[in-house]
Image 1 (cartoon, rainbow, N blue to C red):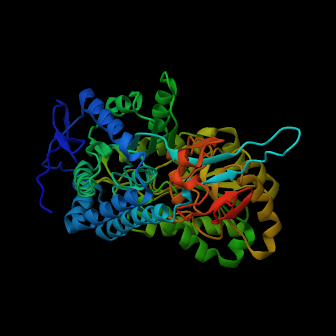
Image 2: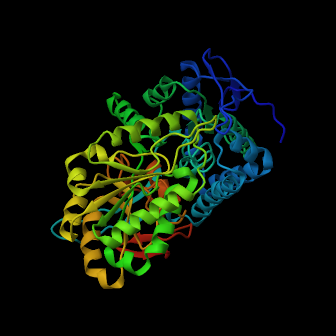
Image 3: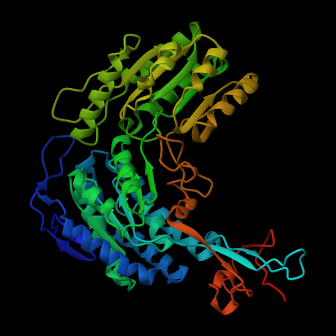
Length: 533
């Protein structure tokens, strides 16, 4: 595809460059700016996008699942049709490299198609039927039937670190469209050209499938107010966000302050504690050091599942292990950070941590010289008492940085873990002889995170039904939900119950004959059978 980029927003299929303030993409390897000036969306742009989404929602909410599935499949095909231009553009804007971006494109199109398959299977609506019991005493029981319906237009904020899989047509957009909700996408200013290319692909799919133009809009902007206008708009029914705690909390507070508050599904960062018990170090210390260093530096540490915190029990083997991790981190070739803003944020975060008198830098701790956005691989060390006393030591360092916390004993370790804030993941490495200790640790960690890992590393999130990518605050604002996997669709749906409703007025998923042939819970039993008189 050889479309000419506009540098503007796309409002219901039409380009808009009405704004005045402009910004440019920056190549993080060279520090040079891109050639296309991008324009911040105006309040009128946002209003038109939301109004168009409301018009579209009036149609989408009654579309059969198969039609929504066809749209998702078509979006996937249109993204693939962008070919190498998409990958090259994303690489210029993020420095992530073609191999990583090729894999990310596959994840993006793969999750679109997985949601399409979910729709075609149909049971995602969670149809529940409790049949009438007119003879029940002392009072008859009415017929009550319940299922999930779309919530309305959704505002999605793209992530900086996944220019494809968590951006314009990423997981939040895919799950919202699968639910039957139009999407107004706030592009990330770090990769605006990539965003416009993918938006054009989405628009082609919307047109090809005959969907209303307001099914999708792209809002560009590098100013905070652009996103705030979107969240404040009364026509937006929910928000999906992936980014920093500061930005996510601002969006959450704005949504809560509206005359009609709306749900915000914000993933806001995580330090993903890793516990490594002495038996594991003794049994496989070299392999653990190799794996930990690789996980911390993967993607230049710019994953929300980066293991930024490692708990160990003091001892000679532990000290040798930390030295080994430090050496491997120093030997690894530094990568490129996504953009200058992330570099500045990392510099400030690590500097703030190093102000603590009981935190030592064993390696790194500084930005790299040169035009590229880079940061030295960094290993920090503190003790458990200092960690428990200062919650600022739980601040995220978004980059190739990890903090070791040395504990005096197993009891000290468990007491320190009790002070953890909410996170996406927690990992325990243990020997088979340490299963009882691991069980006690998992009992603590289960209250702190959404995903528990055994003898592995947290980087890498599978797009499957069982995945839980969420956790207690401050990891997310909605710990009961996930932003990865097929159950992510439930964020953008809400249950409606029907009492004593005539069969002719019921949606197909709740009709007696089960015309969709889906799994339903009928009188507390999972079945595909039709109801019999």
